[in-house]
Length: 153
Image 1 (spheres, rainbow, N blue to C red):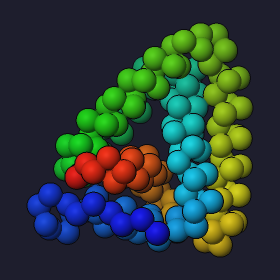
Image 2 (tube, rainbow, N blue to C red):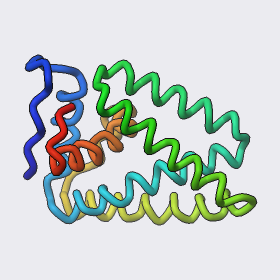
Image 3 (tube, rainbow, N blue to C red):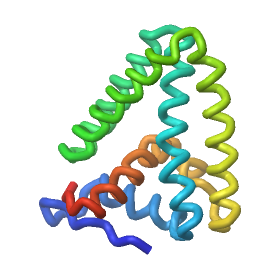
């Protein structure tokens, strides 16, 4: 099990509580490894599918997501999500007319892996309890990266 970097303020922030709860159902190393790959893939594919509907739908989703992340009051997470989103949008644009079939395939395959990971873990996905955990998943991936890099959030 990985330990989280302590929050900067020393207070019990919402982002820390969300990550702690999310981490409870992501203890098994195989499940965690699957999530480290599948969550970014799902986020990319979701953005691509929304972009396929209409670019402004994707941009609205990004804006709403960033507002959610801003409300968690963690500048390192917000900046990292802005950077990740910029890379994902560039990838979506590069897919051109193939964005929908590529992203639909990625979406399905990544979710299959997620559920396999939770079968291995023996616990249901956190978003079954609360939909906001779909937005916490990317922070979980970043938190693991931040721990390795010694970044406090």
